[in-house]
Image (cartoon, rainbow, N blue to C red):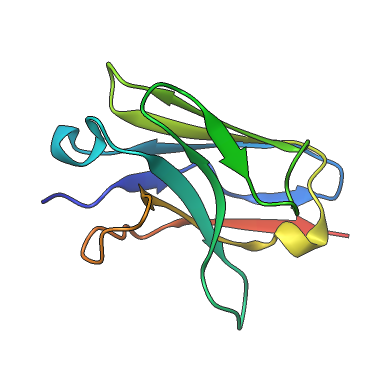
Length: 115
């Protein structure tokens, strides 16, 4: 099973926006609930947002109203639009199924928000 490939992270100022992308294998993506996770420095990985195959989405309270998760089922890609970024959003961001497959974590993409 191929690991997903996350991209789009970089250094951004507080209040700015970023769009993250994840390319996953068809086996992983098809029919699955997908999610974005993040791991802040020194903390455990946490789920940020998840989306059902048909498109219904749910968000952690910390990002509700600022982040938007979306998916393209034809291309097996997952996206996360992040607006009004805050320093506490600094983390490595990962995509995986929800709940996560243990052996399907990619390298992640680093998002750093400066104050």
